[in-house]
Image (cartoon, rainbow, N blue to C red; front, top):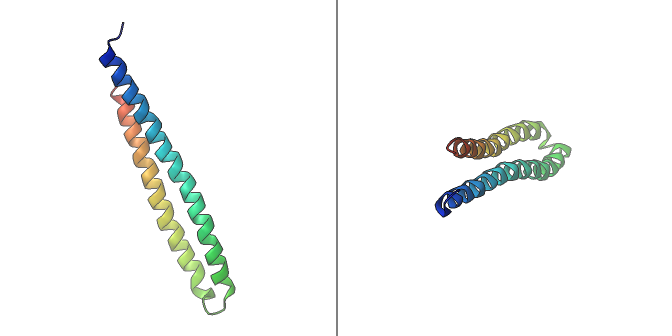
Length: 88
């Protein structure tokens, strides 16, 4: 039979698991929304003759940095969750 302290420890580990999973999933959803909104602006820039030559290069750079940022947050959250699950 588990003591109250052991149940409390499991509760905190469960909460940490939910939070780390939520952060990882949330980062993925935010990435998709961010890139979708940014594409609207870059599509307009691609139609303007003066900005057309640069818009695709800037879009590529923007999307690469954004993906790296959001995926780093998701990876850190997954790593934290794995670390906590490993301590059980």
